[in-house]
Structure formats: structure tokens, C-alpha cells
Image (cartoon, rainbow, N blue to C red):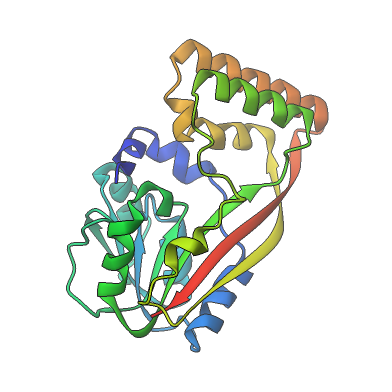
Length: 248
């Protein structure tokens, strides 16, 4: 698990990445069969704590694991007493068996080796506990501004689109360790200043890995295209949060 590379953009990540819609957490409560209040939760690949804070805000006690001490420093500074940050790897969790009602991977499961991370999640879950893996996806495939950004990013960073929203992550969870696996899609709309959206994408791994001049040019073009599309300076964008939940 190599998410420690986000340490270098921890501030940009935390300030500009989108939150997750409330119905996602309603769906997790439905899968659990209980409120998140006082649930014991492990958030793996927690980063700067976007998911962690939402879970703690619903009253959960959250252990937040990430290999990046830099992002965890941001998380620690923005979290209360319900959150325990732990430097660790999702492929080899530094935690005892059977501790958690819920294990979450928000925007992070694809950074792990499922052959290792799934058994680790199963190991730390309680009987009938829930594993949830989920991602926010922008739905802009047909927009010319997005096509220009995506094609140039792919040219500069070949292979960065290996994990797409049409990939069935549920197939990675269909071992005999789970009673069932379900998918939940939550559509929502993000209204955000164009500069915030551009800053969001500056923290995506394939963008900040570009040479500095290329990165600046790609982001400047994205900004100009968005301002042409949204001359008021605020972009209104469709998203979907895709989530797979599995009961141990």
C-alpha cells in the first residue's frame, strides 16, 4: 500500500476533495442493522480523515489507519477524542482480531492488494461485521472539458485509468468469508468553485506525478475550460458514490 505519497499534497487533499453524501452513511447503518453511534469502526487508507470525521460525527469510535504520517498529522489536527490515528498498511493491519463492527475503505481500496487486504479486514471484523469499500466518481465523461483533461492526463501518465467506475469491486469480496455482498449507488450533485475543483484534481496521484510544467499546463487548461463552461465561477457537477458492502 503506497498511499504515503499523498503526504506531499496533504493540505490540498484535505481542503479540496469532496465529502461523501449522507445517504452513504445511512446505507452503512442499514447494512450494520444498527446506528453508527458507538460503533467500533476501522477506516483504512484514512488519509486526512474525510471519511473518518464523517463516521466520528455520527458517534462512532474510529481507528484511522494510513501509511502516510503526513496525512495522519492533518487528520489528528482536525479530529476529536473519538478518533485514534495509526500508521499502518491495509495489507498488514497492526491490530488485533475481531475488534470492529465496520471496516471502511473510502477512495483507498484500490491501493491495496485484495488477496491480502480482504483477509486482513475479515480478521479484524467481529462476527457479522461489515466491510465497505466506496468511491466518489465524477460523471462528466461526455463533457468536452473533461475529455480534454482526461486524454491529456492519460497521454502524460499512461495507465492511470486502470481503476474505473465500471469495475466490479464486488467480485473481489465474494470469498466464503462473507455471507453476502451488495452494491449501493448514491447519486448526488457537487456545487463548488472552479478553483476548488482544480485544486482537488491537483492532489490526484496521476496529476501531481506529472512534471511540474506539464502539471501547471494541464491544470490551467482545465481551469480555463471550466470557466468557459461555468462563467459564474461555480461548477455544478454530477457525481455518484459507488459502494460495495459485505457482511462477515
